[in-house]
Length: 471
Image 1 (cartoon, rainbow, N blue to C red):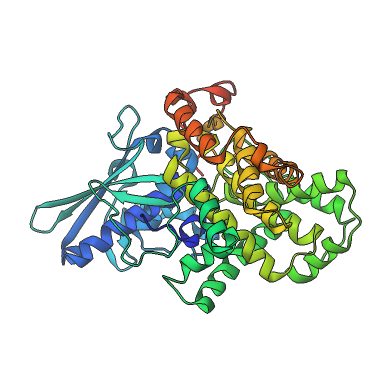
Image 2 (image 1 turned 90 degrees about the horizontal axis):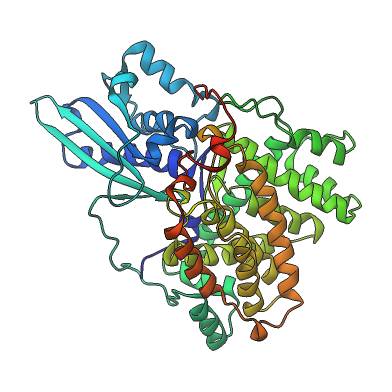
């Protein structure tokens, strides 16, 4: 069984897109690392990058060109200074060169060496990228990669094969998860933890999970305190700060912990809950749209759903540190089912593969954390995805802004609703299973017109005229 860890589903990186930013970023860096391993890196005289399919059609709006240059420079998306990301293109244009992996300057002209093939796609996946290196002896080495969603990258012809350290529980379907948990008297989060122990010790694992959650909290906090227009030309105005200020009655706090405690202590009506959850989701995806640091969960376009629902759980239900980690574990198991049984790539499946999957993940996690059974958690995931089936990906201007940012708020609220419906239901009486919905989602994805798969050629993307500026 293909190894999918919690840290494959949740990755720390930068916006605005896991498939169009994070994937090409990693592909560019990987290409150079492979040249380095082969002993060819020091002989590189020039590099060229070609983008195909969806990467070309919506690449500029998603910052694909910037991401490729950051990858060629060897920058780490989990640690780089996000304030300087936008300078990558300008610096290369001004200097006519780029420092590969930060240490080997070679000639590079973004206008000539970064090619967008708007009318060509590669056969394996719509998100294709080909990198070529001309060596000092005149020979050329190239590599073709595919960004398959959620920041996952595969090289052409690459196979994952069997995991060298197979986990104790290899569940490829929701039915298998349910059977496994019943047979071993485990919750979903406990099953995931046991699997992770095949790959790392508990202390490293918990520390990694806490970094994931801390990054989510930080992205919410930053989004709640930033204003102005988002980059790209649509002139979308940030709203999270305005909503947050009203909910906090103008109060400010020096650190994240005091801020969270203040939110926890505030009275909460149903209307307030809706506003808080929406604020959290908008905050993350406004940060994502501005090339901020977020957690791919399981994609960047849907990065706000799980943090919003988890922050709701923390603040409204006084969740402990241990409970926040359990939430992430359960959510990752559901994300893995969609990754292996369907897709988490909008270029293959539309937005149902992003917002729909993240909503299903959050719904299952919240259900289990609120005391629901394994069957109720799986039912919550089914309900959440069922009501995202057929959701298209039609980003206006190719930017992860309209309708993407608001969809995160809607996906978060659907997840909470699905969780509470499941908690009041008897799953044995359900007519639709999570496995059925995953199959249906994949069939829907294959039937969906390419116009609605992150190409900006249909839906809202062609209804709103815009002159997209450089990010």
